[in-house]
Length: 69
Ligand code: SF4
Ligand code: SF4
Image 1 (tube, rainbow, N blue to C red):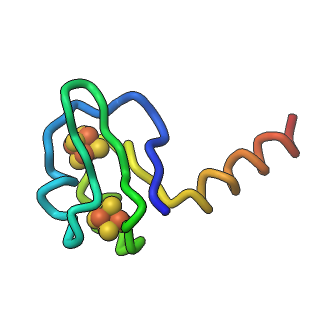
Image 2: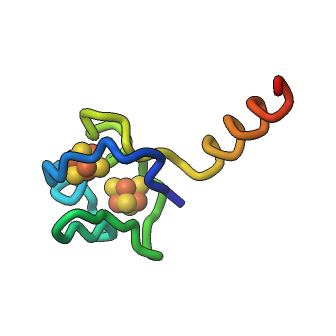
């Protein structure tokens, strides 16, 4: 599953346009990944401000950070 990892999204709509299964909702100042995401990674690669990431990567980063701290 893809998740939103920061608040840099400028609502350009590029991820919505590229998603092959229409799994991204963009409305006003909020973006949401829906359940039928297939983890194809297209939205992650196309986002110009690195706002999206696979959830597994986020957990890895959190784990490394807590180990160092
Ligand atoms: S990973 Fe693929 S299927 Fe999932 S939200 Fe992004 S573009 Fe859509
Ligand atoms: S491509 Fe990135 S910046 Fe553009 S709407 Fe999607 S998450 Fe936001």
